[in-house]
Amino acid sequence: MDLKEYFRETEAEGLKGTRKAQRESYGWWRRLRWYQKPTIAMVNGWCFGGGYGPLFACDLAFAAEEAKFGLSEINWGILPGGGATKVATELLPFRKAMYHAMMGENIDGKTAAEWGLVNEALPLAALKERVTEVAKVLLGKNPVALKATKDAVRRVGVMTYDEAEDYLIRAQEAANSYDNEGRKEGIRQFIDEKSYKPGLGAYDKDRVKA
Image 1: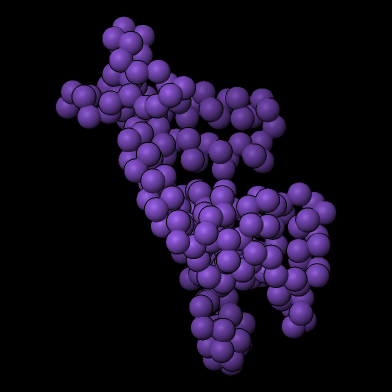
Image 2 (image 1 turned 45 degrees about the horizontal axis):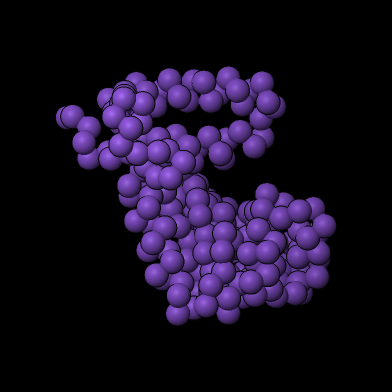
């Protein structure tokens, strides 16, 4: 995002311009959040303020140890927008979220991993290799089950246990209706054929009959 454009050219158009820019960016992050396939953020530089929107929208996140994260808005007299405040409270414990938002201090990739903003922090030279490794593992999973799983993790966090239980039953039924043969093949390879162990890897989805 071009901040000069956002804070000068957009604001020059008044509330209409600001709301338009917000709709566009929030809409993009929403599409990313519910995207059909797994998504991975790879942070190798600066991730500030509104950058927390796409960071949270991705299902997994990895960072270089040298990367910098921050909610610097308090330092120039504004509220952390772009969903950044919500992201902080979703990913961080309350005290850390409050400190992060109110102090305006930067943290590096190592601290971001310790706090829970990202899954892992690695030396920059190893970052791409690790993300590629994770992506290859995900490619081996059942895509229907992956979509249902990523949606479920995002949905159930705001539900009561009973609501989540009901939702997950219906989600499993819906996933089965789309890919029942894939589910049957996974169970067949595990229970009948004993060709793999679920705790140690995924079934061979390429063997599912068309």
